[in-house]
Every structure is written in structure tokens, then in C-alpha cells.
Length: 195
Image (cartoon, rainbow, N blue to C red; front, side, top):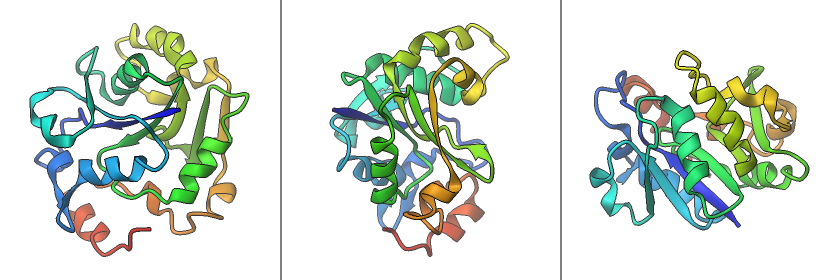
């Protein structure tokens, strides 16, 4: 069993409004991300800063345990509330997920605490699979108020890096990595085909 977690607690400052409720082809971003996780994850949850706006999502809701700590705090909350040992994490502003990439990430988990792909030599920590064994390392990092980088705890866990060469075999256009931070990004992503 793997829990799917949509991190939806961000402030969406560059976008100007809550991205979770932005429509793309008639569906809200949060609903697109939830749908993308359902084939691989049960249950699916949304990690949010406030519960009420998300009551109609039809998924388990978890409020950030530590407010204002960004994606690291969201990941921590997801792992704490997950009924499963493994959590597949996605950001609410990444509406596409190539199913074969999700399968590749999940299939690579044995013997590791996390499976994280790299794109352009950088980890993408919000398209990743984490085990609850990561909780102590994240908790230690959260005690450092200036260390908000999600990847900060990676050196303390067993991590399986999915190289770009590996994942490009199943997601050659990097569709799963496309995120929307600005209205201009939305205009660019709207024309993409969803797998």
C-alpha cells in the first residue's frame, strides 16, 4: 500500500491566487493531481494549510503540523498522517503524471528510504516516493529554522536517485516535471497533451 500525497499548502505568491483551484481543461489542478495518483495510491490525501477550502476534494485531508515551513513541512505532515509506510508525493502545481514514470519510481523503492528523480542534475523532491523512516531526519531538519530545502535531509537517508537517462525512457518530454508558477506557465502548459 502506498499513500498518495498532494502538497497543497503553498501561498502561490507568483501565481496571484491559490493554484490548487486553478482550472486546466475544466478541472482544478488539485483534482488533476489526485486523479493522477489514484491508479498507484490508496489512500490519496491532500496536505493543506487550511482544511475548509479543500473539503470537496473527496480525499483525506491533513493540515500542516508545522505551519509556514513550505514543502518540507508538507512532506513531514504527509509522512506523519500516512496509514502506509510509503508516500508518493506530488505538488499541486504539477498537473501531469506519466503512469510509466510513477511505476518506475515505485518499482525502485526496495532497499531505500526514498526514490527521487533528477532533472537537469537537480533532484525533484516533489515527484518522489518516501518511506516513513524519513520522519526522524526531516524532524531534525525542521528544528533548523533557516534550513527549508527539502533535499537537506537526503544525506541522512538511503536514497535511490532516478537519473534523467532512466526516466526519459518513459517520459521523454518531461511532462511529469512541468509545473505552473505563473500565469505565463499556465498558458504554456495548457497546450500539452496529457498522458
